Amino acid sequence: PDLVVMAKSLAAGMPLAAVTGRAEIVDAPHLGGLGSTFGGNPVACAAALKAIEIMERDNLNQRAEQIGEITMAHFRRWKEKYPIIGDVRGLGAMTAIEFVQGRNDRTPNTEAPLKVVAEAYQRGLLLIRAGLYSNGVRTLVPLVITDEQLEEGLGVLEEAIGVVAG
Image 1 (cartoon, one colour):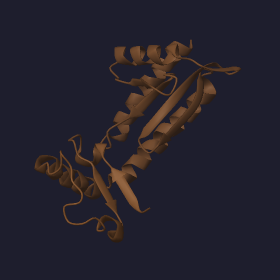
Image 2 (image 1 turned 180 degrees about the vertical axis):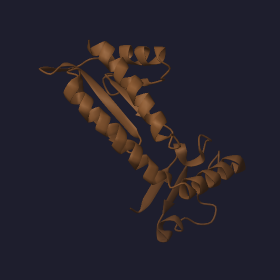
Image 3 (image 1 turned 60 degrees about the horizontal axis):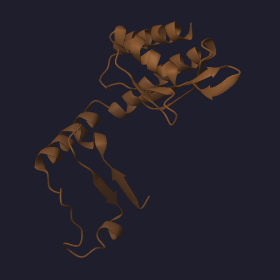
Image 4 (image 1 turned 120 degrees about the vertical axis):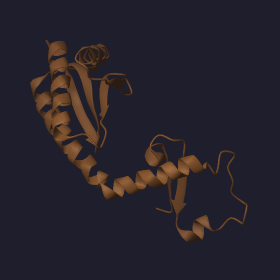
């Protein structure tokens, strides 16, 4: 691509965004032609440098893929097991379960995720409802999570879904 815009996780939660691109594009404006009222935050820049260092050192991109594979394998099994799960999807460590009324009624089920979130909370797992119709539950676990911790969290999530699904 000509330009790539990034933010959010770039500085591990500190406010920072970046635009990168081909030299002939980013060097085209005259000196001083680009600016920002919030530019030049040295603390956020230091956080970003350290976050990038840790990502490279610990190979967190690969870890995100592993987390996604483990999580999606569970989600796909649950989709077959629980009729209220209409779809599962994800990219790396960010995954989601979409709830519907049932196998034959694909209408978004907005109550199920509220109940799943509440059931999971009672068991010590924090989740958020998400989705265009608020009929989903999204997971985004830390990339430093161990496989054992991930399996424990997924076990709690399945218990919560099982209670809600009846």
